[in-house]
Length: 483
Image 1 (cartoon, rainbow, N blue to C red):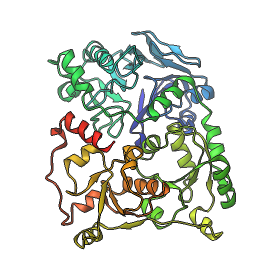
Image 2 (cartoon, rainbow, N blue to C red; image 1 turned 120 degrees about the vertical axis):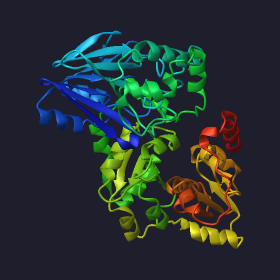
Image 3 (cartoon, helix red, strand yellow; image 1 turned 90 degrees about the vertical axis):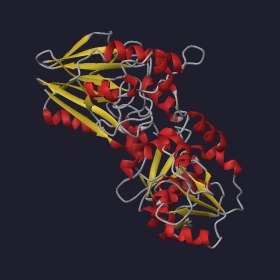
Image 4 (tube, helix red, strand yellow; image 1 turned 180 degrees about the horizontal axis):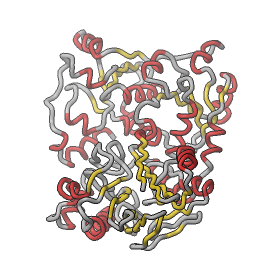
């Protein structure tokens, strides 16, 4: 028996490869199939099944392409309705892979079709639970992603989740290994652990949602408290996973195409393509194509693309670091942005070489920022962090301007004023600055290093408040203030 976790950090997502006696199963694969195909060829085994724990909302699964390439059967639990062929397993049904047995446990709550897969080893002993988004380490799946207007509420789903955990998962032995679909950084839960696997017994002791003395009413109240609206692309990804999608190979073929500056410019004009610059913040600040926006590839790239580019079919052209265009196209496709039309060959230097116009954004150190504050030069400071981060600790005179709500918050800005923008470390502030500049706000100054650097200066800050002590009313009020 071989069990391997294949973790994708930018999605905080765990896929799984399990092999026994010449057969294999892959659980919750990500979009691109090549890593799996290479592994199957190397091991010389046949892929028998592709297990899906539910219709994922935060990424597009590779199940459809993988099934076409290998002939493997896609398996969902009960209540999964798709437009492509699947095997809908029954609750409690057992499926064999080599000398192993997988027991399907239907666990509605995160979504109605959510199911987990209990692996029994060669001796028949319960060995590991592939828990999808039903059970994380330190948390459980949020119950508000599969709400259907007029039929089911998040409270209904939370109630189903309570029953699923108590009746299907908590009775299992403490030494069963838990392999969840996500870790810290995923928006599918509220407080996920940084660990990517653990033991069920530890979760029974430490996971707030598995308290033995917890009533269903308490569970519903705690699991639904503090939920912020899910990113807008979640529903679109879930639909792609349910209905199918264009082949990833075709998406890559179409998107990883080098474009000379003139052709790049023509596509922007004719296709109304968004110019997405994925270089580091410092490189973007020093010189970029006017009206492009910056979302750096070396950060929370996919979630921010999904949050900020509201049309999942938006035509996109890329400005990337040398040799990284294919990586960017791949990571866009992982969250369903399949309409990439090429990248600027030679990058920004090629653009400059033919005399094309460039723009800059002033970016200063926290120390220079402090000097300007002391000299009375700084008028308005925008804190681009989340309301919870802002409430915990911020510059006394700063306004909260969360990147999450930039489209709503922009209406209160004045294009004639100068704005100094910071976030936690410099990633979100440059995204914010790029979007504002593209919308006509010219007097923008980015503060490098963000709040981490500002804390090391003498700039006056509020008293620190532990985030865990913030009430839901505080958070709701803070969000309302920025909308």
